[in-house]
Amino acid sequence: MRSAILIVSKHTEETTKACFEVESRLRELTDLRLVDQGSENLRGVKADLAIVLGGDGSIVAAQRRMGRYPIPIIGVNFGKLGFLAEYTYESFSDSLESILDPATALDFRRRTRLHVSLRRDGETILDEYALNDAVMSRSYDSRMIQIDTHINQEFCTSIHGDGVIVSTPSGSTAHSLSAGGPVIHPDFDAMLITAICPHSLTLRPLMVSPRHNIALHLAKAPCIVGVSVDGQVTRQLEVGDELRIRVAQSPLEVVKASTHTFFDALRSKFHWAGHGNLKP
Image (cartoon, rainbow, N blue to C red; front, side):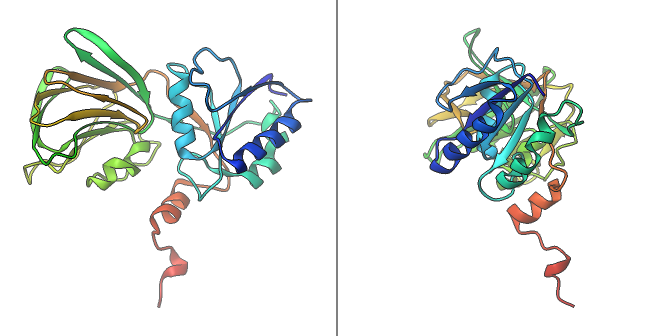
């Protein structure tokens, strides 16, 4: 059996019950580490596999808390089919012994992550890892802000509008999609830059290589501006702050369910029509 399993559970009645059931089945088989969702720091925890009971948001939070070197994750979804949490609880329970058997070759999907750092007056005041996106945007005030964008230290453009989103392929189906960005298959390794309500009809989403470094400099802000990392970590910004974003050296490995695909999730989440929905 795999030597150590980490369990991370969202705090709901359903997932708490499932957590105890999984723990009971694992106790005689593995060196179990049970980590409560309220335990913020998972950096340095050693395990072969992390079982995350919850949904896509729970996986996003877990990988962030793991820091630079995330443990491979198997996501068990307690809602609709997820883009990250591909297993239902029933399919996970049926496959548990096989998953724990080291002779089983698990099918991992590598998910690109972002390393996000915020610089102010020459100091780093925020250092995080994002699975979906990093967003610099204005507050509720309807005032236009200016973000100077550099790629590999070369000036690219000044974005005038509500803000900008830098996302991974995984994050292309999140905030970026709402701002008009494209859907990118998670097997593709890239970063996507999407302006939010830009004051220019020609400023379109831009996809760049994972070898590029992106810098967003807050040049003008007549209102409150903030940064959000995966929608879970936020900071208020000051004029002159610079957000530096690059592809993290360590991607997240997520166990892929054999019965669930990315296109299944697109049809389920976005209600894309399949052949069964087409009328002759």
